Each structure stands twice: as C-alpha cells, then as structure tokens.
Image: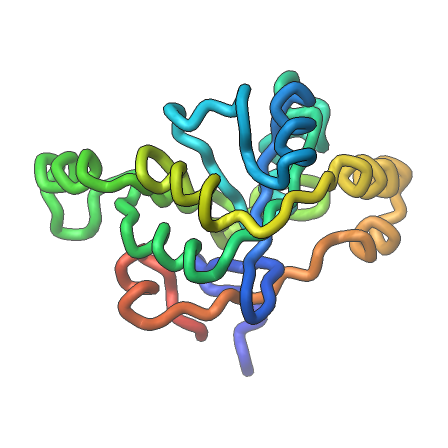
Length: 202
C-alpha cells in the first residue's frame, strides 16, 4: 500500500513553468511601496536577511494570520524559477550536514549568501505536522538578485489570509481549504535536492 504521507523534507509550492510563488509578511510601510513598485524598495532593507517561504500555511503560522505586529500585510511574491534554483544552489543549511564538523559548517555558512531551514509544516489550524517545509533566507548578493532580477510580481494576500482564518474560526474547514493556494511538490534535479537535504519522492 502506498504511503500517503509526503516525504519528510519536500518543497511544496504554487508554481508554473516560469515562476514559483513565495510569501513574506511586513508592516504596511514596507508592503505598500513594494506593491506599488512590484519589487522591494525603501524602506525595505537589503542589508538584513530576508526569508521567503513557499508554504502559505507556514507563513500563516509565522504571521498569525496577518495579526502579529510588523506582519499585518501578507505578500505573495512570484519569482523566476531560475532565481529560485540559484538561491538553492548557493545555500547552506542552518545546521551542519551529516559528517560535517562545526568548523567546516561555519566556514561554508560564512561563504553562502543563502540559508536553508526546514521547519515543521502546519495544518489548517496551524498545528505542526510530521513533515517539514523549507524556508529560504537571502542575504548579500542573493537579496540584490531577488530584488533586482528574480521578482516578477507582488500581490497582496492579506484579505485571503483573513478570509481563510475566519472560516477556520467558524469551524468551516471546507470553505477554508477551498481558499488555500494549490501547492504541489516542486521538481528538483537530484544534485540540487541532495545539496539542500530534500528527500526524494517515496
């Protein structure tokens, strides 16, 4: 019998042939200029690490359905798949790899403009699940490429987030699920999957 559970570490996202959707949440003073410019502009700070998340529900967990201070506007950002692949290829995990010393990992981490982290995925009620979701932290050159080259569009997903939460609060899970973005396993070349510690399909 086929195991219905997804692999422990698998990228699931909304994507098409050209782009993948990731999520971030900001205060309106950052989100509004980004929506107007269709990329991130001042007061967005390129000097800080910026985390992008392909999982909508993990973003909801992080921002509390757009209710946490500084995270009241949820942005759905489409970025080129080429850019996303570059980020993964130039990444370092947030923990040492198997067989790697702490010193080796620190050296690799300091040379990498992208950090990869695998955190427990969330369900509709934001409870943790057994499988994990990827978070991608961009810094330095990666942030510059993200802002100047990779972003192909930014949409406001705040109303969608709050509508889903309202259905969840009212106990109407079917209506809530109907509003969720469709996320599917994201295809990765074997070498790239190995590099980021992703599991292959079961």
